[in-house]
Length: 143
Ligand code: DQA
Image (cartoon, rainbow, N blue to C red; front, side):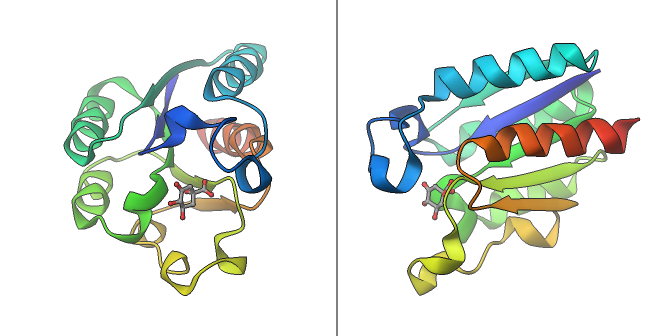
């Protein structure tokens, strides 16, 4: 089984962008640790990042055919995108939402997530380890 791990805008700068908030690990580091954890569990991952909303919607459509579960950090689109919510509603498997930072400790505009209304689990404020925690949860749900 394959798990799609999708990342929204500016996460390509992970490790360089506001490291006091998001930490020093890069997205390539996250991909590597998730790949290792997935293979330990007999799963595969398809790891993607895009700065554009439509590309993320297209990846979620692709996941309908190719993925058993989706882990998604929609980044800023979390707080704005009905299109990403609608796409996730058209996906049948488990969806886990991840935020590296604790969005609830931050500005009020980060407190609402459109995606949370669809998510089967949400991991917030656990740093980049949140992706591994999400993967463990997705593996359990697919068991
Ligand atoms: C984020 C939190 C969002 O509010 C922000 O726009 C991001 C990253 C996180 O992982 O903590 O880009 O999703």
